[in-house]
Image (cartoon, rainbow over all chains, first blue to last red; front, side, top):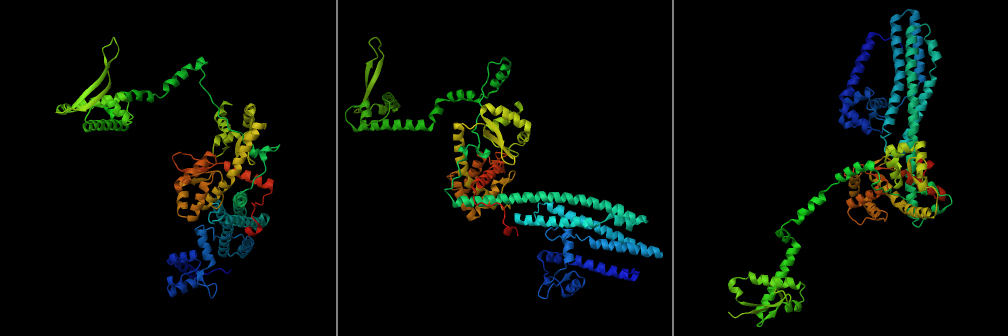
Length: 413
Length: 206
């Protein structure tokens, strides 16, 4: 390359700056184009489109095709946003190496001629190339780690992941092959007798490349592990799917009787459960203290609650719905008995009535309730009924009278 | 041996010990010395410690196979065979419902709510779940999706395939017993030469 004069350099500067500004000016529409794969021409004015094409940002791959981003621009974006679906890895080392050789030659020639400004410029370019070479590996390694750490999450299916992993391994192999091309003996020869070249090509580059080399080996190891895991998952999924299909197709399928083979496979030798039980041992005097504490710590809430319930008042018990309902039924039956007495002219025996209507009340309760009902009547209504107790003495020596029956009759006022 | 007391109790109770169900115990069981100690202790009980092919889950087997042991194993085996299809269908259903690209493995987490939500809106998933729930392995009597799902997960928890870290929170972790299930299936397939593939054909790989 001929040395650039200042006029050409400033021209280059102006054009480059102008074209970079174009990227910024249309950033949204261009990014949309990156995502869609083509450019929506309606989003641009005609002159803007012309400028973008002239700037080699957009191109038309084919007459029939819509405008698209040039591959280099797409690549730039993919690298900037670490979009692993589109990110490219450049494993071409031979070309870079060739450029480095040529630069070194040009630098030496310029020095030989004593043209120091040109030599300076060549050294500058050479430094850039060396950095490019190292950066190329760095970018590739970054991309590989990125894919690895996301478990290839940028593709959805397991099959795709396996394919992506295999692609990454191929890239990695190319990168490692590229590293082999770098012969340090040659680089040492190239930089012979020049400190600056030696520093740039030998110590610096060698350092960087050896660290890249170990990174790549680490990535390779991890990729292989991950691939094995993917394959295992894939095998498991397939086994599940196919076995389920087989069992559905053969509902009567019965495997061999493995438990009764002479040599039972370990998978089917699953022992029955044993639940170990233990009780308190009272024979160890040393543990009495602990046992006593355990007993004391037992919750006692149940014992405290019981007397509370027993001491509830009679009224409270009466509130119980079931008992109240029985009480009400008894009262109704007794009322019916009184109505019967009113209907009937003669006296009516309470126990006869009970038997006749097949009521389930205990006879004693029945009599009590009839007496209670009688006592509860207002004074003037009491006179309407004649109550006659059928009583016997409890025994010959006891004058206590027991009521055996009651007969009730309507009394004329 | 005293330090392994709780572990022994779990093993004796028929539990499967894996990295998910009990990380510490699993680490201990991986040590040869512990295995020997435990086997020595279990010998009078006619039990020994065994594991699946890749040592990801441990459980107890009989030492000597007497008549009673064989009977127990036969019953156990019948249950295992009966449970194969429902378990496989469940694995497929979970994988499809949650949109996962691979089968469930030990350590995977399943959120019950997410599973219910995704099944609710999809008639075919709903139908498959319904069918699965009424399989006699799960034996659900309910028609309500929520109850069916809860029952299925509870049964799987009882069988040791799932672990529920917090009893009041509805998420489950798949245990290593799933590896055991896969090993059982692989074993039966190999032993009986079933036409069940688990390697992708060349076609599928391209």
